Length: 241
Image (tube, rainbow, N blue to C red; front, side, top):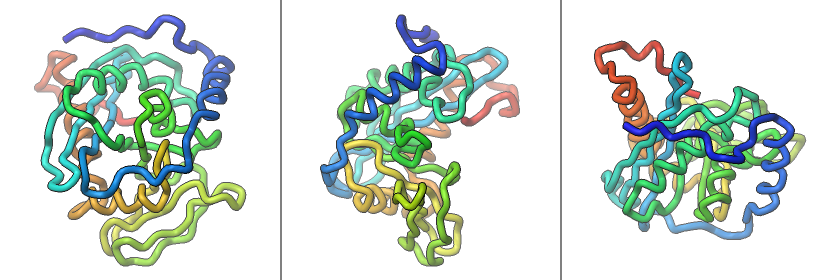
């Protein structure tokens, strides 16, 4: 398997990365409703790391938005492209994630990231970054709320509570299954928050986590093991961001 190198000119320090982040943030589109739920394709994106070898594996899994059946899968493995800096984690992953997306032949449709969009300290998480770079509608569905405050939503499926940053709603804590911990949904690019939540519910008919993320999580782990050439080893050396 080919290991993707770090692109020429890729930010190598915090100041440069923040400048890029600030410039791209100005391109986010927040006035579009986004694609209709259950139409076209949705693509789950996720990554796994091997810290010992400084590798990251990315997976892109296209689902039929109506049936949630897998349409196509693609992976890529690359060098970690940026140091670990909270708030700048997207810079570690994006070249490899874009390579996985580029390997698809099907239209990806809506991008669903295991991470954040506007629910980010500088309002520009991975979902926003990928949305702006690709021009596609995108959402972030995270397992944890990062640093933001929220009230517990009601216990029923579909109940939600605002995810707040200094009084601003930057996302929602959304209950995808009755009595189960919420997920944290935020807009990435070219979609409304209400529609992002509607998509998330549709993508999570049985489990807390959307099917997009479940498929992509499994696939990126397998891709990393294959790249290491050691499928018999346990998963202890594999790390999720």
